[in-house]
Image (cartoon, rainbow, N blue to C red; front, side, top):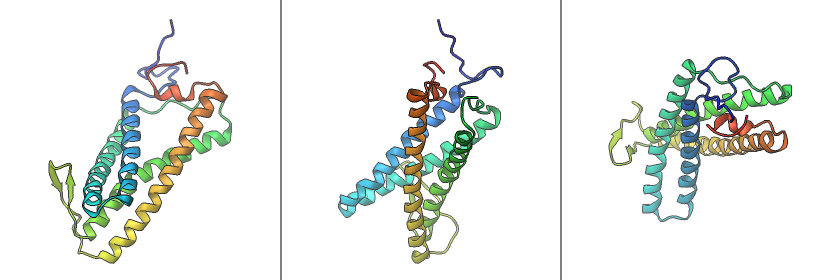
Length: 189
């Protein structure tokens, strides 16, 4: 029977730790859900759009918290080395996309929160409590500019997600090196 390396040991570690897997998949689900929430506002009534955007903002804060948690987790649980069969360009691209993911996973929620604060709007956390605004003066023009940057950065995030998924599928099904299974607690790496 295959021995599953859950990333708990230091020698021969090929999988991410279970905690890293949990952070990864929760964040992935939250990012895709948040994208769908934002997209759903386009054909919604004003009242529906406001409710969807309230959930979008709350989920954005959740993504920020998950990302900070994930970074703190990584301090104690470093990721496994990239497989030796990866070409130099694949390793460089993997590192670049991971760094860019973290930048966007922090910048998008913070930018949205800042723009919301500049617009003088509250961030209601799923009806449980209100997250305080940044201590800034209301400036709706600046808020609008930041919201535009936020939307563009969100599209960049989606392209990065597609690149990430294509890479995982390439390594899993074409290269057959089990790339996807590095982030799953089952399967052969």
